[in-house]
Image (cartoon, rainbow, N blue to C red; front, side, top):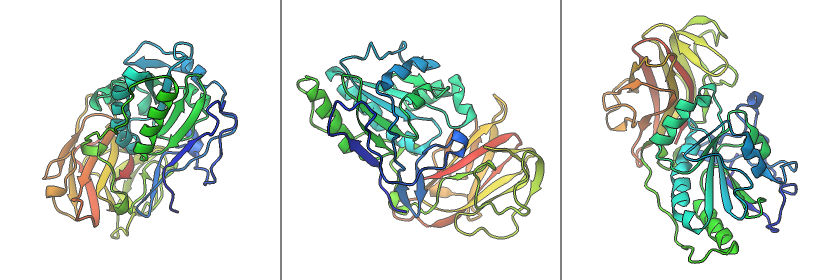
Length: 377
């Protein structure tokens, strides 16, 4: 399946949202309402799943009243935003696609604020730990986000926009109606040109016609889509696949796991004593590990300690050896690192001109880690 990130502007800028076009694409597996349309990867190509229901609300900004908290601003309302061009960007802080998009959103917020643009980042959680306000505040600080962030733990704003995807950007005109949307990362030039056009249409003068060029680092670096041969992979039993530990997954019960045969590409497994839950697996004894045969420049793993203030040291190997120059930003060349909080960890970064298949392994030197999902870049 080969699809690009999707962008659509409606020919009538007075569109209420009830006539949004529906693109012909597969509907994502809702996973009980948790996954929705997180951007997937298949055969090394970005896949942006796109669809907007024709029942999207005519006044979606009214749903801002459903935010459970606000960061970087007092609460914002549809009434206060009248006459403004508004970019509403849905994200969640463990989503790699969202993290790679954020430098552009931050740059647009700063560049176009003097011309009337208001950027609102709507943090809508995927995993339960992403509802923790302290975790969200740490992510906002870690990624240097200065624009207003609406915490949408009850999905009130998500439902108000009838959204299904991370990341998702909605371009709202001064009349409070959606003029365009973009699902997935990428198409940044097209999105910025639209912002410029909407600001001009709203009467702004002197709007720059140049494009931002943010310098992202670590996990926020743009993906090498041509080199991605591994899909996002969940560890909890609700959506796990390609799991090869002998005997398969035992649900919600401590069990010993081994991997008897070398994994084929995109297969993965656990070793040691783990309890596999619906969205994560928890290590019960020290020395347990996770392995994955992958093909991508970057490998990320969403991890967290099961108890606050309980750092967990780990060791990464690639094909049985220390990663050396292929280490990610969250471990050193010897593969050593520490899980200190619930977030995405970049553990492998191959050179741009040397991406190849490898067997990744992470061993945890103490128990209590929760492992959620692999993503690649």
